Image 1 (cartoon, rainbow, N blue to C red):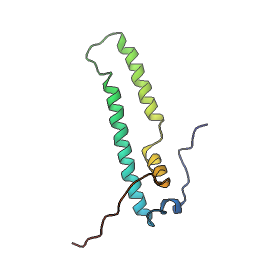
Image 2 (cartoon, rainbow, N blue to C red):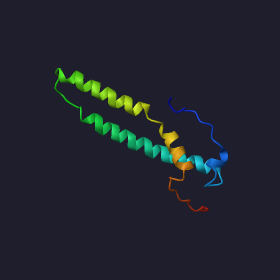
Image 3 (cartoon, rainbow, N blue to C red):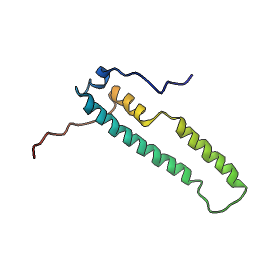
Image 4 (cartoon, one colour):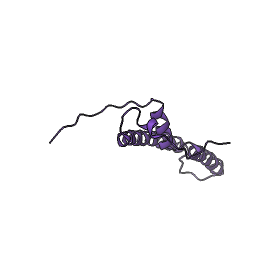
Length: 102
């Protein structure tokens, strides 16, 4: 059985590091964006191996491989889920900026 994509989170888990839910959500969203960018670059690199300008019978086989690679990435947990788990487990490094008045 696969892991549920909807998980109820306790606010205390999310605010443990920052004492502020909004700050925690900003950190998680920035990490999710990093994960998403990395996955997109990785997928693009793998699919670019199949790029060809010649049409032939092997293309059908290559398309199947492309589809399998794409399906693998579709089945992966979403970047927001990964980022939230990393944040709760203390695996996300972040620093607080200083408040400055302008």
